Each structure stands twice: as C-alpha cells, then as structure tokens.
Length: 81
Image (tube, rainbow, N blue to C red; front, side, top):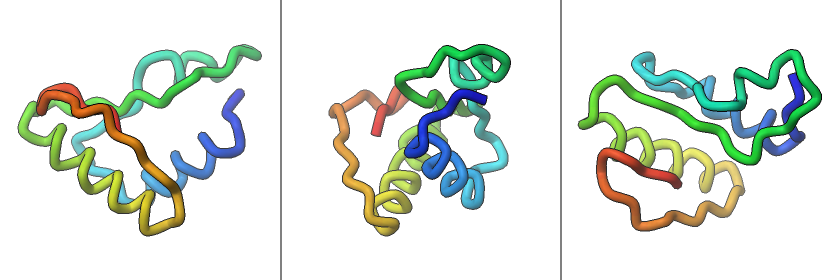
C-alpha cells in the first residue's frame, strides 16, 4: 500500500484506539494496488454525533504522541483535524 511513513504511523496509532463505528474511505484504501499516494486520510462515521467526538479524541491522541495538529474550524458533521 503506498502510504508515506507519517501516514503509516498515524494510521497505526489511530487503529489501536479507533472507534468501532469508524472506517477509512476515500482514496487511501483505493490506492492499495497502485503507486499513487493520497494527500490525506479520510475517516468516516455512520452517526453524525460521533464525528466531533472522534475528531477530538484523535487530535488528543496524536498530540499526546508528539504530533502537531492544526484544525480548520469545521462544522460538527464534517471535521478535519
């Protein structure tokens, strides 16, 4: 799978703490058998009320692990940490 080093590290970290209702979609899983790299990782939830909570949890986890996270001031049903 063509993931950058940082994408691999972040996905492993998030996977170990993931919400069972979440899933990775978009171009990241689709590039598994190609040489194309995705510029982001899209994590989706089936329930709107989980989006903001999951973004907060993921952001806190990444920051605790030494990453710097910049948000975009998104609306609750669409959050990009």
